[in-house]
Amino acid sequence: MNRKATTMKDQRIVIFDTTLRDGEQCPGASMNMREKLEVARQLARLRVDVIEAGFPISSEGDFHAVHTIAREIKGPVIAGLARCVPADIDRAAAAIKPAGRRGRIHVFLATSKIHREHKLKKAQDEILRLAVEGVRRARSHVRDVEFSPEDGSRTEPDFLVQVCRAVVGAGATTVNIPDTVGWSVPEQFGALISHLYHAVPEFQSGQAVISVHCHNDLGLAVANSLAAIRAGARQIECTVNGIGERAGNASLEEVVMALQTRRDYYPGLRCGVETREILKSSRLVARMSGLMVQRNKAIVGENAFAHSSGIHQDGVLKKRETYEIMDPVDVGWGGTELPLTKHSGRAAVAARLRQLGFALRDDDLAAVFTRFKQIGDKKKFVYDDDLAALVEGRITEVQETWSLVYLHVTSGNETVPTATVRLRHANRSKTAQLVQDASIGDGPVDAALRAIDRLTGTHGKLMEYSLRAVSQGMDALGEVTAKVDFGDGVLVTGRDASTDVIEASARAYLNAVNRHLGARKCRRCAVPQVSK
Ligand code: KIV
Ligand code: ZN
Image (cartoon, rainbow, N blue to C red; front, side, top):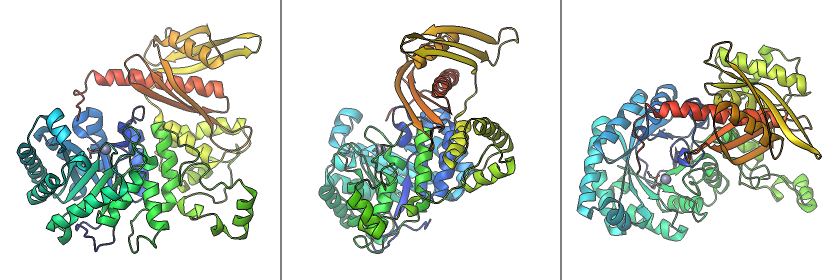
């Protein structure tokens, strides 16, 4: 990435990815360490400029994730979020330290009247003072400091100019204007950015970059981000699949492809994203976060390049551009694939995994290969998507307190659905580790989950359940994602895949149970959660 701040004359748009911070804040999207690291690796392959890896003060887990990503991921700048509080800033600095000169501290403080008066109970001069002190403290740790006036779009424009000038004076190299509550509309937001650009000489001289961070409450996050670019913004904060707080953030793939596809309207503007990695990134984030992408989602939805009307199909066959404004290959769709079979050896599987971008440790490869052989016995062809699901299943594996040993289900239109389940406990003596019980339920899945609850002593409420075919054919793997509330209001995501959908459901639920038990253990030693 070009470390010198960009000016409006510069044509480089910095892509700041916040999938692992704002995206992960989305209820039910929380990821464990390995999942975050895998997403970060993919973001590096996608060639984003900045990865916001987390909010280090918020928990031990977040600190550890940011620290590990800063150590492991080469290429992008690694940012850690901090409130304008010394302890937060110092903690963020410690977390990003392994990234060295690629480390960024992102400090934020609310500036709008409603936040000042009701949330912070502070006057404008106090806000200015705290913002400057926060930026100075961050600068004492790193050269690369970003400041965000939270709820910037609803802040009085003249006060916002004062804030921008003050923080740039204190050493901020990027000033990010968040549309925190997704209130803006494109013309107005563009005008605000233009006003700031012209009122702050350091933005014109290139001493600091204007960034924007748009939320999607009115479905305008991408439109607002693009309007801001036309007005002088040179960094866009966004997330893969647009995941994020409430309705989400600006979607990375939409912003990037809008700039590329409409080069005529954004002449010369470019970003460094490797667009052919977009689909893979989308699928990985969907699996890791448990937030599935709707079929008609632009760029990455199943229907994004599917033409169903005869007239359209005819047109595309005659000339693709009649109905396609982008080449699907440019975002990672298409390509012919030679599926593997049960006869494929370990070397062939390892080679295909490398092609798919997975760098697995030997123990992970061994586990994936064992699962591959099991699946290969049940289905004729193992496709790339099946393999990716196996790898991602391995990544999402957690310390298995309980594992499934045996499942037997009876069901039918005249039968009371009944499940018999046998589980193994990881830490009990040999004689006590196997437990077995049976339960009836509304259906076979319900019966199986009830039996698991009886055996594990948990009482999960299934809040969301989705089943999708991972690849093509009648024998496709069925992948189940279950979001479960174990009574504490936290949504825990469990996931697994099998050619048998009842087994996949039981395994996904058990994955959630194990995560819940693991998190409970972790919470006992974690620092308290903070709110903004
Ligand atoms: O939406 C927001 O205001 C944020 C800030 C922390 C940048 O996420
Ligand atoms: Zn946000």
